[in-house]
Image (cartoon, rainbow, N blue to C red):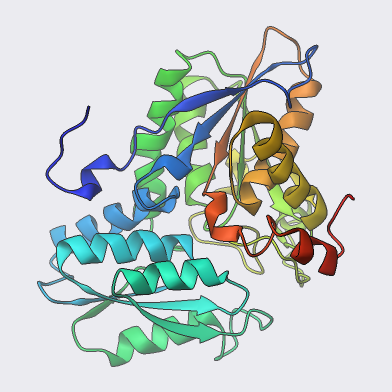
Length: 325
């Protein structure tokens, strides 16, 4: 049993679980790093703590200060937890498609929540990016985490997530599948893994409606379309994303993401969120096309408990036209 001084010391060192029933028997081994077993329930715990520590080290965040961030939810939960332990005030700017569970979670840990519309461009003054910047500028003693462009994000995954994957798989990995939100997870982990073995192929699972596949293939920044999966995909190119480390981007529909997440729960007993379904859909397809002596690893970014009113609700799935039934 672990014995730690505070909850933040449990961040990282998440387990790797083999996927059995969803994986094609004639394809590659499929493994999943269960990031929802971080203490606040998502991969974002890693960067929430790292960003605060770097602010403290640089003297930018003082005792009793305020931490501001634009978040789809999970970063907010990680920050609320870290701020509660460290004694900071958290102001979290979330968009209106974030689940009620996420809003209630951050409020339970003392964070103030500001809600903004999701269907506006990133540079619109009403967007959650713009509102977070304004609040940070107007609040004395505040810092803006800026997870999309703060390179502490990528560094956290280069120094921890990537090495953990390599060590857990004992260097036996041929493909890595992750989604792109801020770009930090896929960039940091891929950077480390490709340093260890340049032949590892990195696949990005991206919601249909995000601009990133087109950007990868053409270098052009186009206009995105709305989608329901939370926390991944973009209408802009994050500063943390090194697109050259990504070998291929695959678009996944909301329906494919949600139904794969539900299959993962029913067949493997693993309850992940919508982005988990996005990652798993691509990982299952990639593994099916590879040899039995090869290995595919993917990430499960957050817990499905945050989506009980959405993708795990039969009524919601039917209302949204997402049900396979």
